[in-house]
Image (cartoon, rainbow, N blue to C red; front, side, top):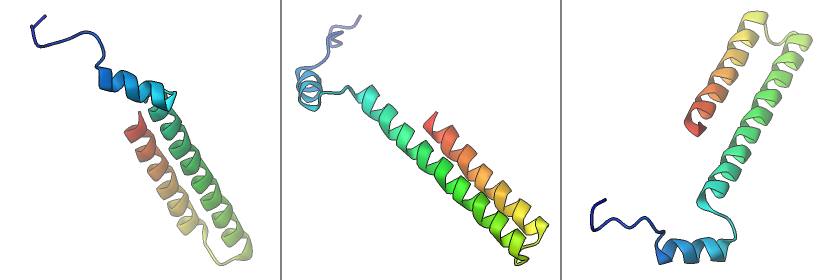
Length: 83
């Protein structure tokens, strides 16, 4: 170990963690869970909108499939960045 490296957490980190009540890893996990939940809700809303458009005849099957594929792609990108 190098002389300038300290295995103990810094006093600043300990004070922030004690004041927040949560560690940084827990806060990152909570933020990731919120983002992926919003992504799933948006994709569900998109699928419902495509179904309603297809049912009413204002959207053909090809356009609906492309819209759903785009939604799944966005969800996959969000998942990859969160992971």
